[in-house]
Amino acid sequence: MTAGDTIAAVSTAKGPAAVAIVRLSGADAFAVAGRMTRRPLPSPGTFAFAKLFRPGAAEGDLHVDEALVLVFKGPRSYTGEDVVEFHCHGGAVQPERVLGAAFEAGARAARRGEFTERAFLNGKLSYDEAEAVLDLVNARTSRAADDALEGMAGGRRRAVERLYGDALSLSAEMEHSLDVDEEELPCGFVARIARDAAALRERILSEAKKERERRMFRRGASVVLLGPPNAGKSTLLNAILGEERAIVSGTPGTTRDVIDAWTDIGGWPVRLVDTAGVRETADPVEARGVSMARDEACRADVVILLGGACGEPFPDGTEVVRVHAKCDVSRGDGLNVSAVTGEGLEELKASVAAALERKAQKPVEADGDAARLSLLERAASVLGDLPVEAVPLANALRDAAVVLGSASGAVYSSDLLDNLFSRFCVGK
Ligand SMILES: Nc1nc2c(ncn2[C@@H]2O[C@H](COP(=O)(O)OP(=O)(O)OP(=O)(O)O)[C@@H](O)[C@H]2O)c(=O)[nH]1
Ligand SMILES: [Mg+2]
Image (cartoon, rainbow, N blue to C red):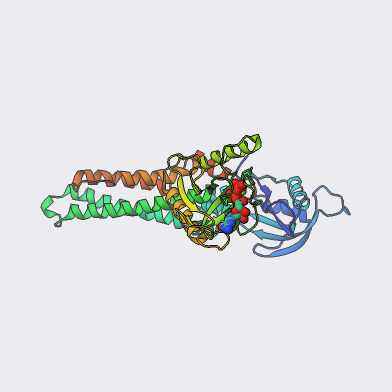
């Protein structure tokens, strides 16, 4: 596989749809497309309507589809290479048939994220921008999408580059001061550099905070409703979702399974989970549900606890929001909420959002996309608790500048790149 070969994929989601896009990219993209249209392609930057054929089809054979053909001449394309897009008919059959014709015409199947990988390799996108593209197509909430869009516009890269630049200039000032006589330095010079280093550290920490939030946007958070039977868990699930997702009844033990749905709480993508009421029971099916409820609570980022003790203590780091439900009937300890009148619902969502805000900042296990975060954390720790003395300050600033330099991303390992692009879908 060379970078020069021409790749093809369906870039739109599978399933019934009016339109699907089949995309070609590579040195031979125009030739491959020409074998399919059997007539000259529209000039770059314009489009034309054309019938698409299998290259091997005989004269008079039926075409595979009719499509809008868009031509982009490299480097003015998404990948930086020659690109052709066929906006063909959607559905279960047509996009795959057009793709099949493209393979017969000389293209090969694109790997996951290969279009974006080529854009990166051709200098069309930085690592951070490519990562932001991935975040955007996977975004589950508007807030996550906004953050990704800012990243695509270069926001993440510029933020770290600025930190790097500022660390470099502080470091240079400090190094220079070591070479001159102390009397020549302005009064309070070292104290001023120490203050600037502390301010730089705050900015690094705030960038690290955003990076942690991004990780929460990516993985989503799980918020589990837990409590005894009839506490009102399913009713609360339905009220938060604004739809009747779970069965509600006055009979204790109504919910026996784990019921979940994705929703947006305060901009966080949340998997909201309803569980079986926790109680001792002789019914093996219900007992299984209760044990699943406890498991979900142990894995949860936030537990919304209704009415009393239920299998606590939870693991360290679990955020617990205590709710007194049915507050239209009686009031009690914790957040008073009524799914019937709606009282306390907004407060509950705000408490959950605040708990998620805290949770996002707690340390989690490092994984493939933690590289920038751990570099930022290292730079912050290097600059932590500095004495107001020239030599340790100079050393710390030099170390911080080196670490921020790699965080700003001039150099990436191939593992890091593989990890990023394999998280894309085919066709992106
Ligand atoms: N008045 C009032 N009734 C409620 C409220 N929330 C739930 N209920 C009622 O309480 C009963 C139990 O509600 P569910 O939501 O099924 O309770 P649950 O905790 O899911 O119960 P299990 O699935 O059995 O564990 C139902 O009759 C609901 O209509 C509320 O805010 N106010
Ligand atoms: Mg229930």
